[in-house]
Image: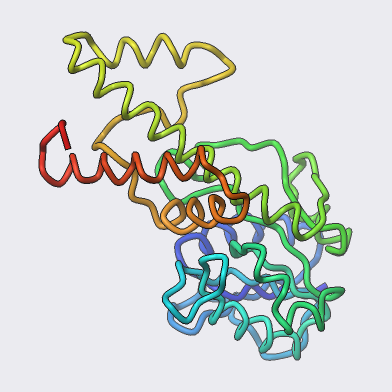
Amino acid sequence: MRVLQVGFGQIGREIALSYMVPLAERGHEFFITDLYKPVPEGFEWDDQPVDIAVIVVNTPAAAAHGSGDGFDYSDLLTAVRTYLAHAKFILIRSTVGPHFFETALYRAHAERIGLAPEFYGATKWSRRAVLDMGFSIFTGNTPRWFREATAGGTDIIIGTPREVALAKLAENAYLATKVTFFHELQIAAERMGIDGEVVRSIVTADPRIGPSHSFLEEPGWQSHCFDKDVPAYARAVDSYVVQSAVIANQRLLAMRNTGDESA
């Protein structure tokens, strides 16, 4: 089988590295293309038809012309439209929200479009070299040979397109809320004259909580994924909890910028 990855940015490079070996070991051909970045030598697409085109393009926060769920799908829709002409199946690894499934392009070709949300990140704490998720997520219409070839021995979780898309947004919303919680906790400990790191280590020793997303480097989170995914989740589910975390994060960022803990 022939697989084409469309997009070789920061996340795209991570995904490509995870695909190269398992696909080759099973005798599948793997190609990469990107409009703006060079691709690894020997993986250039030969412009011939492929069985799957994996789309890894940015879906940034929407400007005024964007979608109702907060994402700008311009590049994604262009990529899907372009590679539907070259691929039997389109697999989207880019983040999408509920509005994507209402687009005319998706509704017209839903049977040929699947999702496999990217649950790893680009930070030093969330890369594949650090995390072992133990699972891979696909929509059920993704060809079985591809799921088995790229899951890497992890458990395969199957969901509908809307289920896996919401799960991706929910994960980032939860992690961002956890960051905000621990940042507030550590700042409060310092105000009380106690060691915030000791407090953090005690709380995160509980295996139900764990240490991830609990470290304070600077107040507040500023993240490419969090900045667009968290508000999108809050809108999608009308979440008072997550919206409160977004407001609290804005206060923490103001504190960072002014150095005033009373901000």
